[in-house]
Image 1 (cartoon, rainbow, N blue to C red):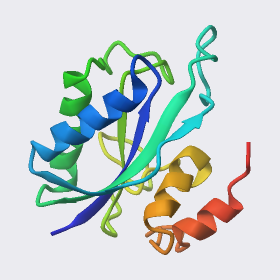
Image 2: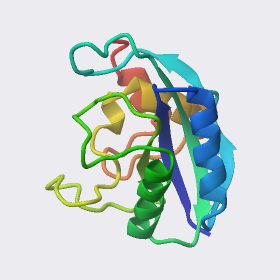
Image 3: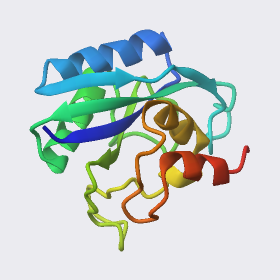
Length: 162
């Protein structure tokens, strides 16, 4: 079965419980959670004014699924909605109960040139985000980025600390 990697994040409510609930809901929707990284307490990036103090709990998960990438994205969005997130009303980088981002799906490249549309794989900013790379490196340090042709460990080593 194909492997996919997602980034997990929460900075509202019971953060760890939110992420555990998201993983359980994924398991109930034709997705097998094969591994989960250590969850990390991180600073928010680009937070709207007045929300800078709401720290995130971030992690990554390795998934196995028969779903195609867009189908998996739909499941991720459905799980977010089930846990109280409303992307239509979200302000960019606003606090959220749960954030599930599809980072990699096998070696698929979708929409990477334009960055437009409902899905872009690999995630267009994954290589710039330590809060994504650190947990991902814990799960799959030798996993290659299909566009940049570097491993997750190499991308992490090149990513600024701030």
